[in-house]
Length: 310
Image 1 (cartoon, rainbow, N blue to C red):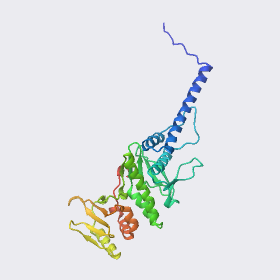
Image 2 (image 1 turned 180 degrees about the vertical axis):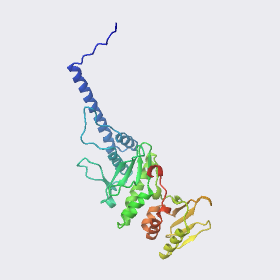
Image 3 (image 1 turned 90 degrees about the vertical axis):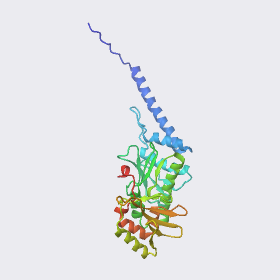
Image 4 (image 1 turned 30 degrees about the vertical axis):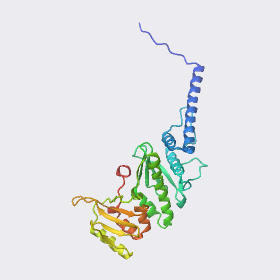
């Protein structure tokens, strides 16, 4: 003789109770989203800003019984985070989020080049990270990961966009936008403990910008010598065998091999009294260096993180 478990009858009251419970759960979820979003746009604390942004990027707002037609995506959250970091770091007004009257993908622009819109897009292969791109170009200019607290700049894309694509724009304005990007990284590093690879934006004296080609041929160096001379600069060899180029009274470019006879590691570093110059600024300021670099970019490209940007 077998005993069967009697079926539990579901009453109308049970159905309504389940419905109201699920609906309340959806409302509570929405309220939690509102609280996090409020912190994102209003907090003055870096830790709160980072925590709220990280949670919002992965937040599932819709539930089975309740959906919200207008939502900000994880990509939008990164754009808001970028703007707020600059604001809290004292760099207000240099990056403006465009009209949000219609809830669509958020776009922003730099004050100096306000006709160029920028946004964040989710990285297809780098986990929780996002790429910062110009919407007219789509190259990954930098990579931001709030979970791992990483910010990596992509030297090749920065040069391809700010030097090549924006050719003809006023150099001071282009450098202004790049300075804002650099300040964003500096703020995250100093205020939030991020690991930051500034790449071609690094202005630290002695920072070695390693060339992708490893070795640099005599033909490439001869070309630099000729172009320098044509522009009234003299490329010289120092006592260590490095090639040095005095660009002005306080700025020197040094091309050096940091490897061995069997394994060359050519690259460049910049010495300037104010530690304000960097590789991409030199390309913008000195046309002969820019042409030399772009003509030989395959060998002279400054290495970026290949796992993220490869």
